[in-house]
Image (cartoon, rainbow, N blue to C red):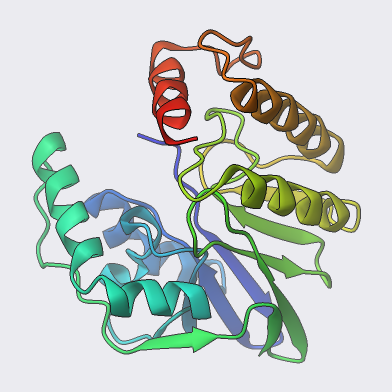
Amino acid sequence: MWQTNAVALRAEDEAMLIDSPYFPDELEALPGVLAGAGFEPDALIATHADYDHVLGRLAFPGLALGVGEPSALRLREEPGATQRELRDKDAELYVERPAPLSLGQVQALPVPGSIELGTEELELHPADGHTRDGMAVMARWCGVLCVGDYLSNVEIPMVEAGLQDYRSTLARLAALIEDADTIVPGHGAAHSRDAALRILDEDVDYLDALERGEEKPTLPKGRDTREQRRIHAENLARV
């Protein structure tokens, strides 16, 4: 479902979990999987405040959740919205959880900016356009770039917060991709540098078609499905 990704990064004896899986059995298994691999997290990060990215708190209720300053503002301005959206999606999918989602004390992180992980540094880059509060996380020491809900091989761009903002984010990501070995989207497969740049070019072409107001654009191979056509109709209504 959604091919949701969570990424564990480690430097020295500290580890960080970025984003989260969705289903209760995945979340229940996550602490044991990470501990067995030596990646037991000391903190959590969400690339944005959508409900399917902040569920690390259900797996690690004792850890603080870090989000970019725009996400922290979104959570303050829309109290309880993330939890309500999760409850609605769970009801739609007949998902039962052992406990409701509590975000606890949310830590606002500087975007653009950086935070320390062990002796290394995680770079935090703005990534708005999909939502108004997106953030990309770059770990240069291991060549990993986590882009949130961008550059997916299973979804077309979902433009919820501005077409030009989305274009600006893709331009920033293009520069970061050049310095990365593995690019991890929020949904779908992780990419090599070349694959990520190809998807980025496809997404720019799609945004061009969206800006022209095309009702039936040519969608990228592998993403031309009924669901993606529905998402395109929503994009078209918004822009």
